[in-house]
Structures are given as structure tokens and as C-alpha cells.
Length: 257
Image 1 (spheres, rainbow, N blue to C red):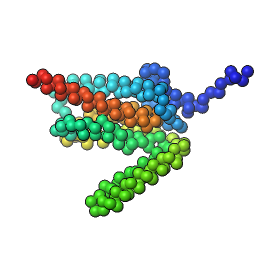
Image 2 (image 1 turned 90 degrees about the vertical axis):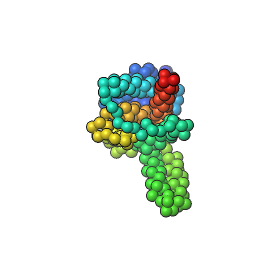
Image 3 (image 1 turned 60 degrees about the vertical axis):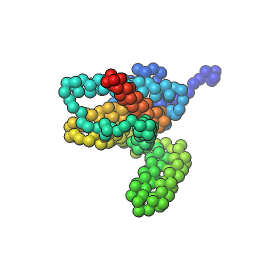
Image 4 (image 1 turned 30 degrees about the vertical axis):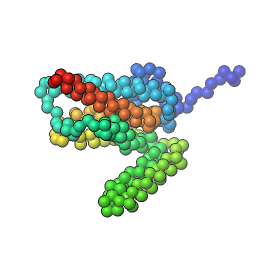
């Protein structure tokens, strides 16, 4: 008779199960925003988690599409957006790689790699950051030493990540998680203000609303499904943006011809 008995999953494990539909996944995301809670573990890579990530990508597309239409309406009404750093850049293969691959991976490591609250993730990122600072400060004066420092930091970060991979999130981090989540989301949005060459704070803040919303989606994916999920979402997000710009340039060139 015991063969028919099932043991319920612990609460953190059950909470990490991917939602079955797009609407349920989006509701889970909105509930998370109302009360950010750090799960004890992520689901990891799997078919269900990949589908859930793609559902979040669809949500990202819908929100960004609405924001783009709003921006176009504002421009049509007379709003002149400030100059952007990409306005004068040529869309080369290296630039596309930097925007679609390198920037998303680097930004996710910086803004959300540590958001799991696990000692391995937090400490390895701190060590890696120290190595990067060392090479920035000493690259001209002592290039060999700074290079060795970066290599040493990379090795130390990898060792820490491996040795501490099974450690649960720090309890103090879990208690303060809502603060960390919103700080990372806000910082991610604010740093994109640097992309603009001009404009006051009041002018630029509305322009980084897309990054704020996207950052909240990426953060949710990070703690629910894992670092691979928010990295994939960010790559898809930037890739779609670059693809849209390339398509607009092609259509514009065809129209002018």
C-alpha cells in the first residue's frame, strides 16, 4: 500500500517548478515582483525550464513592443530623443557580437551573477572583480603583473565556484533579497543612461524604463531557473533589438533608393 504514497516536495523545491503555460509563468513573475523571494535552489537546465525561459522572452517582446510604439508616438508628437552613443557607430560584425553576445554575458555576471546569494557565486564574482580592477589599474605600469593577477583571479574564482557550488544561499542574503533584487535592477537601468550623450536626469530616466523592466525579468529568471536562463534572455533581447535595427536600415535604404 505504501507504493501509492507520494511524498510532497518541500516548499522551495515546489516553488521552483516551471509554470505550465505562458499566462501562469507571467503571473508567477508578477507575483514575484510583488514579493521577491529567493528560492533555495534553481531548477537548472531542462526542457521545462527552457520553455519557461522562452515564455519570459515572449513577455519581454510584448512589453518592449508596447514601449517602442509609445516612443514612436512620442516622436511623432514632437519629442526629440537625446543623442545616443550608437547613433554614429557602423553596424559591423564585431559590434554586433559585442552587443548580442559579449555585453549580455558580462552584464548578467556583473548585475545578476551574485543574485543567487550562494557563497560560490558571490565570492567568485568578488575575486574576479578584484582581478579586473587590478588589470585596469596596473595595465600600463606593470602589464605582466596585472595580467598574471587577472589569470590568478580567474582561477581562484573558478575554484571557489566549484568548491562552494552546493552551498545554500546565505540566510542573511535571503532575508535581504528584495533589497538586493531591486538594487541590481535599478543599477542595471541607471548604467544605461551612460549610453546617451546628453540630457538631464528627468529626460533620461524615462528612456531607461525598458532596461528596468527587462532587468526585472532577467533577475526573476536568474533566481528561478539559473544563470543560463537570464543570459539567454539577455542575448535574445539584444539580438532582437539589433535585428530590428538592421531590418529598419534595410527598409529605409530600399525606400530611399
